[in-house]
Image (cartoon, rainbow, N blue to C red):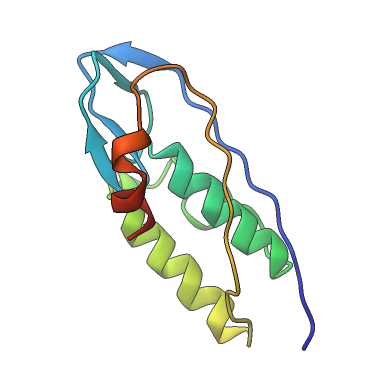
Length: 116
């Protein structure tokens, strides 16, 4: 068995009046991510880590913010497409671990839901 690892990171500016998506779930917060898609930084970082481990380009190459097809898209759809891409290259996911850096909103009670 050959193990490959990847690292992903994503950052978005927050502004009032936008939805706050993290790990595929909508969290209550007064601000949300400014983004072309839904702005889910956790899923975007996971996508980049998986793509990197498979030796592929980053998420922006495959899902550019200039393409209207991805405007407002649910990041879980992007993750599914990334998983399909890496599986088509013969890779399988063994484990994914993530670090989330934020003060608010509190996510402790929602992390199990994000893992699903």
